[in-house]
Amino acid sequence: MRMERKVQTSIFERCAEHEIGLELQAMSTWLDAHPEVLARVAADLKSGEALGAGRRGLSCESALRCAILKQYRQLTYEDLAFCLLDSIKPRCRA
Image (cartoon, rainbow, N blue to C red; front, side):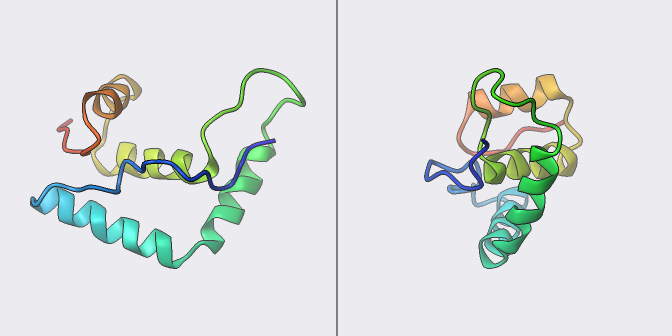
């Protein structure tokens, strides 16, 4: 079963003092103020899960934040992986 929220360092937690960083921080603040969104994400993600197969995935919150970053910066999955590995500050360009 996928966790809705796992206490861990967020990719949105420390943002650069830059236009992009400030926009990501505003998105993070909105998400933090609307935790009900996670229930919808969880329902969507759980609808496609195989029962008891594979390892645990990202928490629903992390999956949502990664999806937002990917779409916002128009990243490929390869570029998203690089951004997540390269730095805790999402500052990559597409």
